[in-house]
Length: 114
Length: 113
Image (cartoon, rainbow over all chains, first blue to last red; front, side):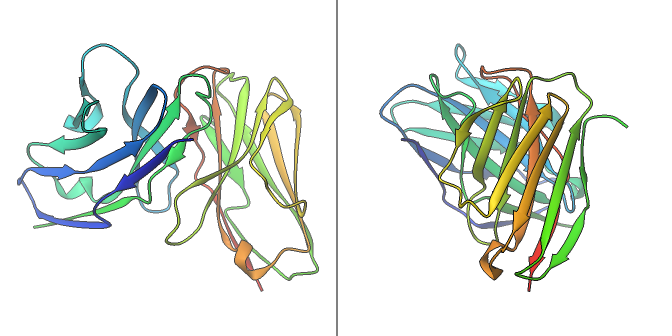
């Protein structure tokens, strides 16, 4: 079975500052990794995903994440945030064999202050 | 209408009521999902359907009964719910059974009194 830990429940950041949202996972098998964003009163939207290949994954809205197998981490980063990035961010994992069974972390609420 | 839609967006029901949540996807996908999002808990997968067949039931209580009449529609029938079932119920769809991206609807906010 897989599990996901998002180390920060809330992250306040000033506009145009860089941000890193941390995600660690646990699994005894190889995994796929995902970051989703949820804006207020909306469903989840995929930001980026790691399936294989390059460990640095670029997503939408200027976000990127790096898969680190030795540290079982998949941290999300953005070099300069905007007010519109205020949202809840979810890290998720699935095994290769059970790719439809996404296991989510508890989420990190990112608040951008002007 | 595009993407994944869910109705109603908000629902208040008593513990003895019977209600249904509806999900419709306009993406031509073959897999559909129900998730539960409770306050202060991770998003939980409830059910998975592939080509109208249920392929996953994540130990969900029988008071939740899913139905998938075709690849575009998914229902969640609710009866004799408990207050702890109050949550946001999200529907998602994906192309098939692989690691394709899951596309989520806006959810139904359910309050059980």
